Image (cartoon, rainbow, N blue to C red; front, side):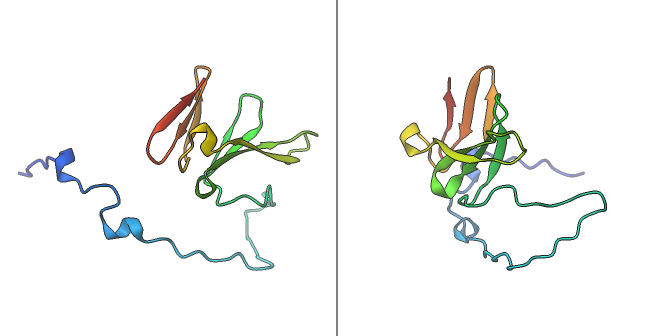
Amino acid sequence: MPQPIRITIANLPRPYASSSASKSPRVIMVPANPLLYVQDGFIVELYMSGLTSPRYLIYTPTNDILVSESSANRISCLVDNNRDGYPDQRLTFADSSNGLNYPFGMAFFNGSFYVGNRDAIRRYS
């Protein structure tokens, strides 16, 4: 009969203690004229360029899009002023002056905005 395995916090390595945590991925540049194959009826188009390693997207209550740019320590807001489906403007929504520290996940809940930082979760009301 299998025996249960019990893991406690004391059994876990310290954050970033393992060698895999310090190994960065190999970045492969996009070719000049890439070919993408998509299913019939679908299209792929460039939506926004000039962002710094975008990691996560979320719609705001006003239908703008927030993008966490973790390595730039910034959350950008993509605004579609003319409502053509593409952003006309990129605004800095938040950065280190607002308490960001390598932001990643974001959520709106009960009138507040939450950001998952590297070291904490922040709530903005």
